[in-house]
Image (cartoon, rainbow, N blue to C red; front, side):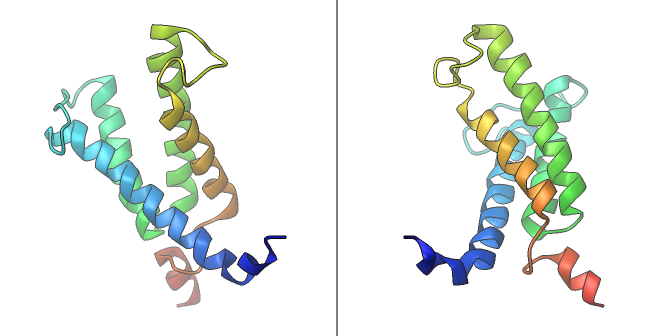
Length: 131
């Protein structure tokens, strides 16, 4: 039924990677610098480490550079964020909507997908592979 999208699968994959990486990077910038409505976190802390992973990992994912390892680390960070930051504080393990953990769960599985599927054609990884 949705076969009309098949010719655009690579374009959609790459766009998903770019947008997800960019948005993830913005979350990190909120924590690192207290911009965009965020609160600056202490760099030498668990949230500071999360901010670095989100900023650097998000930028790498958006650019498609070292995509698989960056996405795998980002996926792990989001799994930890869900269990440590949402489930541990508010419970409701099976109901992320009840513990406000939906973004963490979505990012976790999105980045796990990118770690397995790779960066796509519109990436620095692909550009360097051809050189």
